[in-house]
Image 1: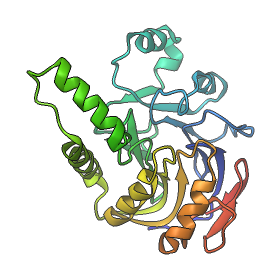
Image 2: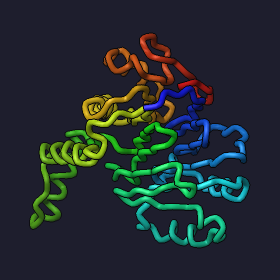
Image 3: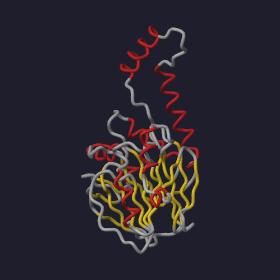
Image 4: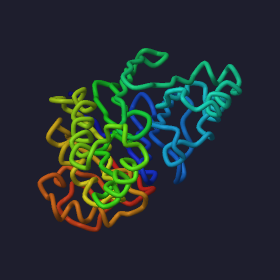
Length: 273
């Protein structure tokens, strides 16, 4: 795989801007400021889902303002209001918007970039981007989706058993097994691959789910460089991960106060890969 020294900016949460030699890639922008974009090369904008913390409708303005812009959205056409909004966009914008539902593959208009998607365990998709001989992964919300605590799940389970005794409802252990199997199924597409750069969800809102998710990613594939994301501004979770898993931090570029990482950055700061 090609070595590269490209500029990247972490935009916050799950947002990144990658300034490559031949194109600019923007992932999941919903906060932070995007610097002025060059119009002499393609700009590819990715939204892994239409959740408000991964997607801003303002991205459609790029198609009108830039001569070579394309938009890739993880969306399954299940929400009528979103379909109505997309259908209301001018045709000159719609022509440059592609929606990805689960597993899909699509070349950019100039055929210089191949985009593949993987179903997410929450909403939308994860993106695999192949461009300039490099392979880039943005994990979207593809994480180990065990978001219910045992106590909360059991309360829900008991209520459902009372309200719907005719249903075969999974108990907590079956729920955990399902989440593990679902993550394993979806990440099969990246199994054994090597990525030049990966953006991986370290979701901090649900106990140790984020740390366990990153460990599973590390078992599935190899990453020359990677950055944690899906952080909700909770950067202490990155510090904690670096402390607990120094073996995975050596090639990490992330917002942390800890040493032992490839590069410590701040949100809104440009860095070099």
